Amino acid sequence: MNPSDILLLGMKKRVTAVDKATGRIVWETKLKGGQGEFVTLLCEGARIFAAAGGHLRCLDFRTGNILWTNDLPGYGFGLASLCLPGGQTAPTAAALAAHLAEQQSASAASATVPVSTM
Image (cartoon, rainbow, N blue to C red; front, side, top):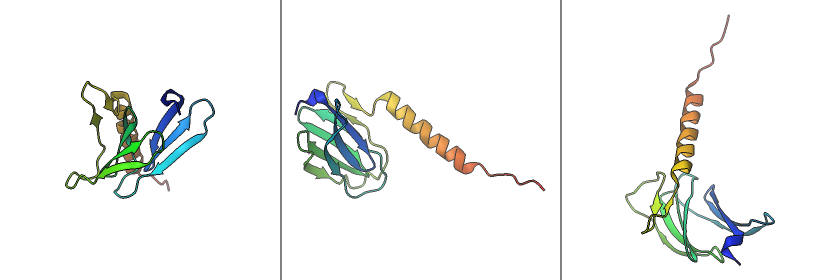
């Protein structure tokens, strides 16, 4: 598998490798435990680092197998940022801004109370 042919998708506590040319799912790994469905991904060579639900995992790029897990005791379940030495980060500023805007929109929608007329 050529890494440049693969798109990685992180959502709903899953990491999925998708063939960019065909859209075919190459492999999918479900991340168990914790709260929240948002998955932050960062790649380095043949390793994928996935943070979700208060846990950090390292997956093998070729197979999706989980190589190790850190339960991050005491860190809670918030949105995680990942960074490698040299400056590669996840999520990007644009992705984080979009996520925060979505949360604000959802909060505003749930705060709206319909007014009935008589």
